[in-house]
Image (tube, rainbow, N blue to C red; front, side):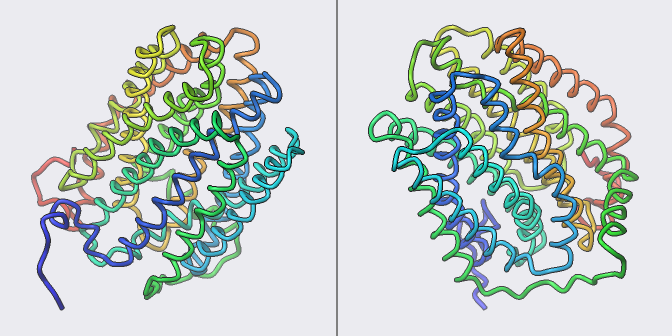
Length: 427
């Protein structure tokens, strides 16, 4: 076996694993298409309806299945092949995107089509998200490289978040939204091909007896009896509910506040992606998971400050700057929480815990979108985002107060796993 390590692999050790390199390449291409579709969908809905409430409804339908079905998805991926599950979900997602493209390109698309297909994508994501999160450790040949792999995933996600909206904005302005959907559909070929090219020796996780409801209950009890897991899940739920509403309001700010078009919407989303990419690179170049607790404690406040600044800005360059801060705070919060969770949870409960994380992260976003759309109808988008920002700052303060006690618990787990030697702080 070749034991030589390139400088890049020393900095990014997860790339020592062939399967992870394939996963990174396939997902990177596909995620660019996904972000193009997200931009195109909210622009199309706003173009058809001019309604912030309808933007909230579409955001709600696309992700609400994750809230209700994620626990069942977690049980599924703890019992069955995560590899085969991902292949199936990617094929279904490709079909959904191509259907959306067909309707848009033929000019017959209506809002109810978008709602139905968004709901279908939500059902797919409810199974795909926990499977994807739980599958990453199976791609890594060395356990010590897991934290780096999770950080690189965030970098990949936000690199696509930077590139996808920028391309999507230009395509919408030049040739129409339908081609964004079409490119997204075709981009799934890359991730399916990368999965098929892998040499997977699937981990043998012991499956205990019990029906689905018993396994779901076991996952809830395990997660909420652990103070670190519980605190991370609750903080993620708060940030997702309040801090992610800005996504559905970007078309309104681009059109009515900044007096611009889809290009400005693409720039705003890309600016958020730049901030998130910077945070991802920082996390990817960290040598250890130790110390992420501090990052997690301050990240929601960073997001909240960015949201308040964005809501008050009436000048595009300033708005782009505040979106950098929003993207930075967002990725530091979710990627740090993800990394800590993946490090401290037990393998036989990984799917169920990550499904709860999916509920907190993805499942709360639609509820927040719906609430935000209703609230914005009464008090306006500016005031809504100010309230969101304040809530994120308060969440950061509360988590920071718990941090000393959480460190003591996490330190014992790190010592058991050999990540931390006795006497050092878990951060």
